[in-house]
Structures are given as C-alpha cells and as structure tokens.
Length: 409
Image (cartoon, rainbow, N blue to C red; front, side):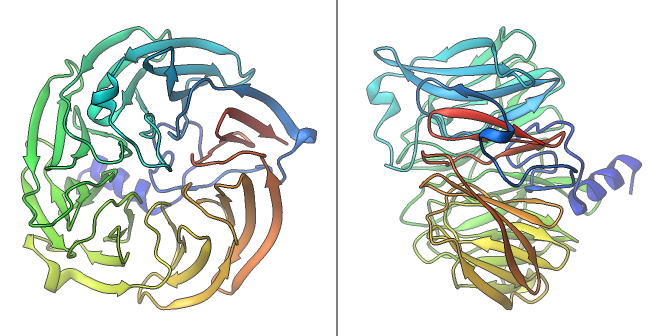
C-alpha cells in the first residue's frame, strides 16, 4: 500500500479533528469528529451570531479558510439558485452568487420534505462546487465567489434532488438518478465538462434516488461507492468502470450516505422497507450479493438520516426518531430508545456525544455507548432543521429553516 493510500485508509477509520468541514458529513465524510470544548447547550447565553438565510434550502453548510458556504433557492420572482459565503467569525455575508435560474418546468415538483437546494456543496483547494442536481452544477472561487464554470444537462427528476457530490482524482462525481434512468456522472474539475457517465441498468420499477457517493480504499485503489435504486456499486474514478455490485431488490428513493469501517461498507436501501447492510470489500469483484453481504438488519432503519459508527457500535435513527445501537460486527440490536420527534438531519458524533436535530426544531445531545443513552441537553430552534451541523473550534454551526447559527463555549 502506498503512503497516500495508507493515509486515506486511516482517515476513514478514525475520527478527525475538524479544522475544516469541506463536504456533507464533515472531514471524513462520515459524521464522526474529534473536537474539544464543543457546546452541548445551544441558547442565547452562548450564541455567537445568527444570520437569516434568504430563500429555502436543506443543504448542509460547509466551511474552509474561515468561510462558511450554503446554497439556497430564492424566489425573485422566478427561482434563483444561489451560493452564499459567510465569515465564520462574524456571520457577515462575504459574497452571494447567483448560479442558475431554472424554469418552473425544469425545476419540477418537489416532495414536501425537499427543497430546490438540498444537495450540500463541497470545498477543495479554494474552489466551491455547488450542486443542484438536474438544474446544474457550478465551480466558483471560495475567496470571492467568481464563477469558474457551469455544467448543465437536465434530466427528468422525481421529487427534486438531494444527493451531494464527491471529488476524487480530478473528477467531481454525483448521482443523477432521475425518474427514467439511474445514472452516475463525473465532471472534469478543471473544465466542468462531462468526463464519463454510467447507466446503472437496474431492472427496478422506480429509478429515482438521492444517494451521495463515498470514496474508500479497496485492494490498494480508490473506489467510488455509489448507490442507486436496487443496487450499490464500486466504481473506478478514472472511467466509471463497475468493479463490484450488490443488489437489494426494489429499494428506491434512498438518501443516507454509506459509512466505511475496517474493510466494510455499511448502507441502507431506501423505501419501502429499508434495510441496513454490512458489505465486506475484501476481494470484491463482480456481483457479490451472495458472497460479501455479512448481515442485514431490518428494524427501525432510516430512509433519510445518515447514521454513525464508533468502534464496534452503529448508532442509527429512523425517520420517526427511533434510535438504535447495533453491533457493527453482527447487526444485533444492543438497545433501543426514541427521540419522539421526526429526524431527517444526519447524526453527528463528537467524541461520545451524539447530536441529532429534528424536523420540529429540537437539537438533542446525548452521551452514548453500547450500554445505553444519557440525555445531556435538548435545545430549541423554533423552526425545522433538515441540515446536518458543522463542528469546529469548540463551536457548533446549525442551519435551520431560515437561519444559520453559531454557538460556542
């Protein structure tokens, strides 16, 4: 294994300190972060700043070089898809860039729980990649918001969009699983031109899904783990070649991002009856449904929020707020509790504290272990929270329906 490959493997295995939050679910893309002095209670007494965000967007914020970036859809009077950068210290807007103006027909109808700006942006090497699914993707300067390129190749979506992009080996990769086709696309990051596109070719009734890929190491090579309706595959970043795949029936409209731990990928399968699968990647080649799926769990599995793994424990909440701790090695449920609130935002684990945010506006913080759960704080934002938080420098950044908040000790 090369030093670079070894670093990536270690990066995915262990929690990292969050000096930046470059993509959906943070520095290791898995919602697990090691940080100190992070507040559990979030209220007026430790509110650093609060900034209203115009329009509507469920995308999670990202951060780098002292700037926080969010995307949103603003009615003016048509729809403007925008990226906004704010100073992390003050909350002041540094730049606000209009990127696309989709027609009402192109935007299409969206699910009641969705928005036209639900895909989270990504930051790498001073460039922001803002993705709006079937309505377009753009690259712009983090420093001043200057647009470098725009990509637009619309397709018939279903219920809107939701999957976020990943960047690997000079290509920006994202799902394009629409109403009629299930696709995975890759753009050249320097030009924004389409580099490759692969059709999932799954014989399922409903093609649409909203998956976010995950980059892992397997066999000494980087692999793009990407889910669509009815299947998950491992793809080669250079050309999109399908290396291995697992089929899981008619699962569709999936949202949770996969998680990687110790040579295994853990993922959920979407509607209608969600399952959680543990897939071993050692020697994965061709179809591995019957050979590499080590266990399947079917109780209280989410269709929207992503889960977290800490050591040998999986902490997972379904959309209704039923929280479970599963054994990572066997899938056995160790305990079960409930937030008694609907959860769409992905879970975030900070040391041994689990952060969860509800559609009703609560922010829950609990101490968790394989033995059970202990309440630390319940916070109230007075409006729905669908986005996942940023954790950095002893602070928590939360995006609620209309506002961005920073809390600190």
